[in-house]
Structures are given as C-alpha cells and as structure tokens.
Picture (cartoon, rainbow, N blue to C red):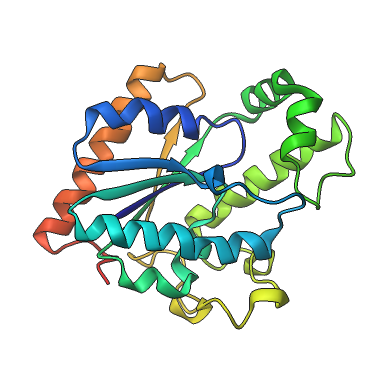
Length: 218
C-alpha cells in the first residue's frame, strides 16, 4: 500500500512521519522532497516526480512493506499518476492545522527558508505575502480533500495533461466512497497523540485492505 500524507507547509507532516515509524511495522517513511526538487520546481515537475515515488512503493510492495509518503502532493495528483494503478491500494490523510498557528510556524521559519523552498508561483512575494499564499494553498487543499470537483484546474495543467491519467477520477463527485481522505489536525494535539492517531489510521486502513473492503484497491 501507499499511504499519502499531504498538506501545506508547517502542518507537521515530516515530524509525524518520523514519530509514527516506531509505532507501526513494515512501513518505510519518506518526504517527497527527498528526491531534491530542482530550482524553480513547478507543478509539472511534481507530476513527473510521482513515477519515481510510486516505483519505490511498488518495489516495497513486493517485499510486503508499505510506503508512507508526505508532501504538498494533492490526492488527485497521486491518483492520476500513470503507474498508480499498479499499487495494491492507496490511502490518503490530510495533515492540517489552524491558519493562525500555521502563519506563526511559517514566520518562525523566516525568509531564508522561504527563499530555499519557494516555487516559481510565489517566489516573487515578500513577507507577509508569501505567508498568505501558503494559506491560500492550504484552503484549496482542504476543499480538494473533501470534493474531487473543487477547482481541478489548479492541478490539471496543459504541460502534463496528456501524461497524467485524470480520467481515473474526473467523473467522481462529492461523496464518492473512493474519494476518502482522513484528516489529522495538529493545531493543539500533542505530538505524541498525533503520532498515535496516525498509527491507528494506518492500522485501520491495512485492515480494510486485508478484508477486501478498501475503496481504492486497484
């Protein structure tokens, strides 16, 4: 299986991956950006990078190991990756936090972090504009997690329109059981409790798969 943890910056995704690994067996955890995005990495780069991570998940799948992957990687993009249908199952979890808390966390990271990580769409912003752009992306991800029809043009771009398999889910509507995103809010949840909640979700998703009831068993 592939477990996707997605969310905007400063939600706590990478921290949770490190914290949960001692609590669950047979899981390998990674951050999407470990493959070193090039300067100016954009949406098209992200679309093409899915193949590398899914290939890694498929290799692990043959060994009986699941991949836990975190990043600013919308659920719909992962589903549309050409090789995603070779996975046994996909489960997605949105890692979120209150906007005020996120803004504070982003401000603590400072301009040096922003200069190092900003994509081309927001690289021209200065504080507090770049914080607001992250909050805008946060809100889109929240809506995307609930509704597959919400502004899909944000991730369906001309550069990769014919490389991605958007038809895999483009006809799904709100409430479709296959579009099922769990949410963990890290706003005020103690770090250890968030890790325990994530471990519980992983175990529940595995049980669904074993029982043949997982909605995204390919």
